[in-house]
Image (cartoon, rainbow, N blue to C red; front, side, top):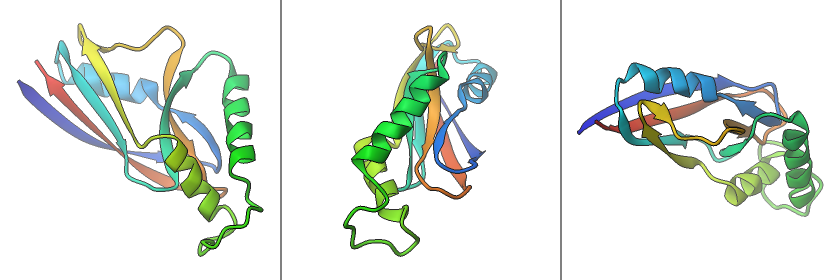
Length: 138
């Protein structure tokens, strides 16, 4: 059994979904493991991870709009130290996830035809987000 760990940094331009499947695929292929499990971890409390459709961009727009309705910036929040988008960003992260587990078979991620891996940025301003990849396998 082998293990490999890698840190990524994803720059965002503000709220939205940022696909980084190709970056992960390239790294996994370079590890030369045929079978295993990849953990993708987001090191933040105001951004999260999603596996979602990567063919139609309207899916990403609808997801963002839905979460904006669930956690609006003008809500009655006590926590707003970093601006009006601060607490809604934490709520959106709480409703999604900061860790994904993806099987690896034949040296590749086992994703569906239309699935992509996304960083879901919940803050209005650009950020640089840290992602950790951990692959275990043979």
